[in-house]
Every structure is written in C-alpha cells, then in structure tokens.
Image (cartoon, rainbow, N blue to C red; front, side, top):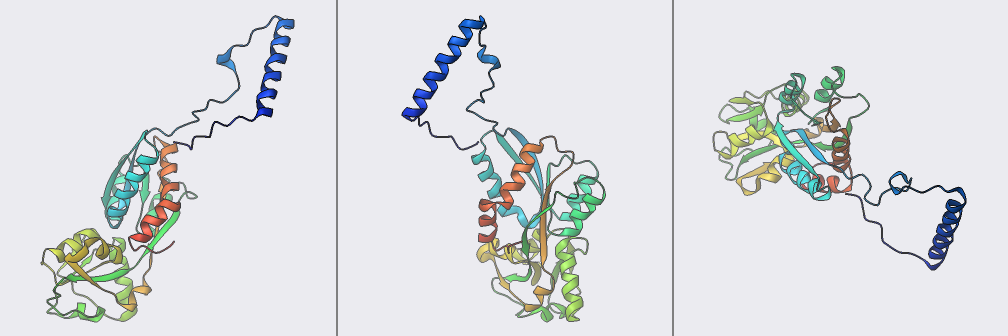
Length: 275
C-alpha cells in the first residue's frame, strides 16, 4: 500500500480551484456540453495497491530471514500473500525446471541461478545479489569431539556431516578442501544445509559444515567454530522473479523489498554479509 498523501489545501489553491470550476461551468453553459465524472482524467486517490499471492522458492539457509521478511512484506502490502518453499538450491532449480509454480527464486549461489537463466526460466537481466555467506563448523554445544579447526574434520574419529556437492554449501566445502589440501570423509552428505545442522543438533554428528547464519539461528543448541579458510569460498546470493510468474507486480515488489532497506537490515542482523 502506498503512503497516503496529507490532505492540505492552501488558500491560494482554494481560490484557484474555485476560479477553475467557475470557468469550467461557464464554458459548459456556452457549449451545452456536460462533464461525466466517470470519464475524468483526474487520477484516483487510492492509486494501484499490490494484490494477490506469490510463491517464493528460497535456499534452506534463508528459512528464518525469509519467513520474517514475508511477514513484513504482507504487513506493508495487506492485499498480498507470500507462500514460502525452502530446500537446497539445486533441488529448487530441479522443481522449477519441471514446472513448479514459483514466482520468485532466491539461490544460495550464482551457479544455480545461472541454470535458470540459461534455460530461459529467469530473465538474464533480472537477478540481483542481495547477500553473502560463509561456512563455519557447527558442533554440539558440548563439542564432544574437541573440534577446533577445519583440519580436525578429516580425523577418522570425528563424525562429520557435509552438504552434497551439487548444493551450494557442498560446493563451498569442496572449494575449501581444495584450498587447504584437507580431504573430509563424511559420515553422510545432505541435500540442504538445514539437514546438516539437524544431524549436529540431534547428536548424530560431531561436526557439520554449515553457514554462519545457521549457527546464529540455532541459538544455544550448537556452537560455531569459525576458521580462516572459509574466506576461500564466499557464497553470493541472487534473487529474481521467475519469467512466467502469474503476478509479476508482486514478485518484483518482493525482490525490491529483499534488496531494499528493510530486507538488508533483517539479513545483516541474521549474520549475512552485504552483497
């Protein structure tokens, strides 16, 4: 909903309006024509409010922030509804490619967004970078395996969980492994970063490679161990409307909301870096 303009009228404006009306009436009387209010060119005060629903497909690492942003967007635009679907970015791309009714896609990396632009499912000029993220090591709050750095994750007695290679957090893990020469033999590879975190919080794993924002959102259930090598794999997050969205106005408005002041504030409070 747009900001309501204040209803202030100056004396000069009032006199000018009165003279204009008198002139119009005089002209009407001379011509014999009538003015139909329904065909007046004067714009309505209500403007064009956003209405309708959209479905946003977003990377799993955006679950907390996008849930908050969707609520804030609906408050700002009462005629709208934002439905959210979260999963690994590569899984979301597969679903959209197969015809899932997404209106907006927010990826945890640029590669998965490129898959959709290459397929013509997102306009190549549409994606906007809105955040960055880096990996950290999540361990149970008691840190039973005594993990202190990235190299510890390769120890045979440390049960480590990582993301699958096709998922952005998995690709970032592979980049760090290559940069450090450390090779991890995980007990499992998960399809989303939230699944990795779940293995750690449940005690099924001694450690998991997740994003710093996931540890931030998890609270006291885990602790994060930052490592300098994480800077070798900074993930950039792009967002864009899907080309065949049924509600382009709302889709574009949501993208603008995420990349705007409110969205950036929420993301930075959650630990995301600037784009």
